Amino acid sequence: MDGVTDPAFRRVVATHGGPDVIFTEFTHVGDICGRRNMGWEPLAYSERERPIVAQLYGKDPGLFYQATQVVCELGFDGVDINMGCPSKNVAASGSGAALIRTPDLALDIMASTRQAIADWSSGQTLAQGGVKPSVIEMTKSMNTKRTGKPQPQTRRNVPLSVKTRLGYDKVVIDEWSDCLAQGNPEVLSIHGRTLAQMYRGEADWEGIAAAALKIRAKGILVLGNGDIRSLDEAVWRIQTSSVDGVLIGRGALGNPWIFLKKEAARQAIQQSNRGLAMEPPIALEDRFRMILEHAEVFETLNGKERFPRMRKHLGWYCTGFPHAAALRANMVRTTCLQDVEEILADYWKCQHGHEEAFASGLRFQSTGSSC
Image 1 (cartoon, rainbow, N blue to C red):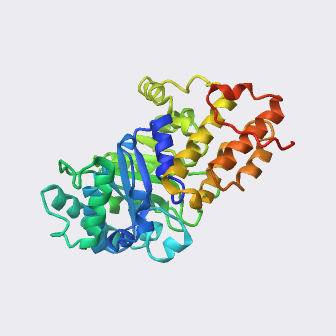
Image 2 (cartoon, helix red, strand yellow):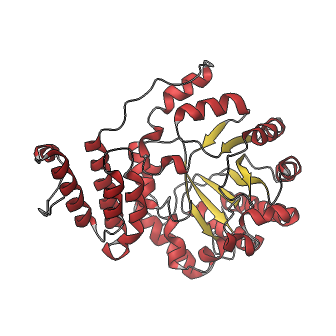
Image 3 (cartoon, rainbow, N blue to C red):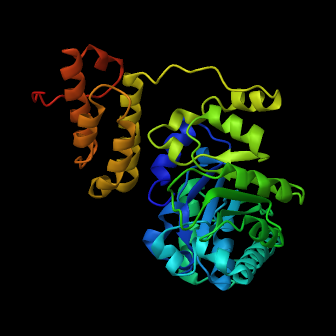
C-alpha cells in the first residue's frame, strides 16, 4: 500500500506479527531505472522481513526488464506486478488497474519481467542487462548497507506474481484471469472490487471464488484480498472462496498483532474448523508500547523532518479505548518521537492519576499539562 507499507511499518509487522510474506509499497519502474532516490525508499528492507516481495508498477516492458533485474540483485524473494491500483494518477498513466484494458501490454510486461528473472538467475550482470552505472552503484550501496556485501551470494529463479482487480468498470475477471494465466505467474492476487469501485462497498468474494476455481486448475496459486480484518475472517474466506490464502492490508493498520495466531488459523483451515477462539483485546499499555516502538523506528530510519508521514499510523493505533478520538486528534499534530512520548504520558496520567505503569519500560516524560 503506497505510503503505508514503508520500511518502518514492515519492520514492526515482521517483528510483532510475522505474516507468511510481506510486500513492499509499489515502486515505479521508471524511478528505479532512473535512480530517483525517493522512488528507491520502498526497496530498503531488513533481513527480518523475509520472505519479502518487491512490488513494481508502470507500463513500459523495457523498464520492467531492467527494474526486475535490480530487485533480483537486491535479494528480494519475489517480484510482484501491480495491475490493481485504482489511484486516478496511476490509472491515468496506463499503469495499475488500467492494464486490465490493455491485455496485450499486460502480457508483454509479464514476459519482460519473466525474461529478466531468467536472465539474472542464469548469471547476467546488471550492466549486460542495460542498467545504468549509477543504478548499479545504488544497488551495490543498498546491498552493502543491509548485508555488508555489494552483491547477493546466490542467484535463483524467484517467483513472479500479479496483483489485480475484478475489472476496470465492470467485472471481467473470467476473461482477464484467462489472459493473465498466459503469462505463467506463480501467484495471482485478486482484490474483490473493480477499479471504478475504488474501495467503496463490500469486496465481491463470490467473484474471487469463481475466478479462483479456474485459475487454480491451471496450477497457479490464488490469493484473495478485500475487507479481511481478522484471522477468523481469513479462515472463513479461505474455506469458502477456493483461494489458497489471503492478503491483509487495511486490517493490519494500527494492528500489527493481526498475524500472531496464523498457525492456529492454518490448523483451523486444515481441519475444516469454523473460527478461532476469541482473543482478549490488546492491553492499552502494550498498545502504547507499540506506538512508541513504531515511532522510534520511523524516526531512526527517516529523521525528524519526515516524521509527519508517521502521523497516519499513530492515528490508526488510537482506537477502541476510552477517549481514543481525543488522543488521535493530538497524535496527528506530532512532529517527533518526543511529542508522542509526552502525549501518551499525559493521557495515561489523566486516566490513571499516576505514572506507576511507566516503570515497566515505557519511556514516558510527562509535560504536566492538564487534561
